[in-house]
Length: 209
Image (cartoon, rainbow, N blue to C red):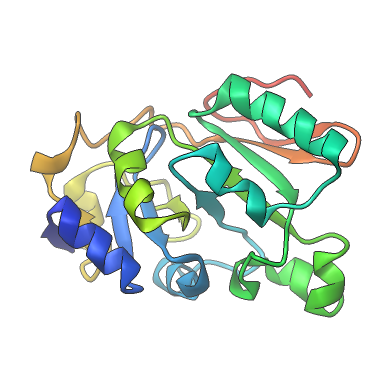
């Protein structure tokens, strides 16, 4: 792990490198959306497990989704209530979502273009952590997930991250607004079914289905 300043981490992310930074839940590993294959390789993660598109502001993520005016009204209402915060919304994906971010279970069912018009989804979230939003405001939306080897618990300390991921860029402790660790709980994941919300993972917050 290479410990760097915030400016260097932002520059590295923009250049397509893997980076790590604190969030309100657990520390994240992140990349540009089109470089998210690097996350799968580093974590030894199955392509059937999707990543989360994280951004500094809600208005930066809606373009990556598609829905009716009525659906957007529902989604924005939920976002206003829970964001910034530990809620990931899984919504229909627009053509702006890079193919590499569409899970293999979505991509293999039909041609990619057909999936974008049917069942492909993207998870989106705005973290409730000032340092994370400061980074994301400069990089734009990033593909993210917890930093750990797939199937293992999330890493919560700098020493753990350094031991398992020596080649990524990680934010220097002097840049943190507070300590590295967030709540230690993952975000709650809620998927839009077309009619209501299906909670796929109960995490740090509760949401009405």
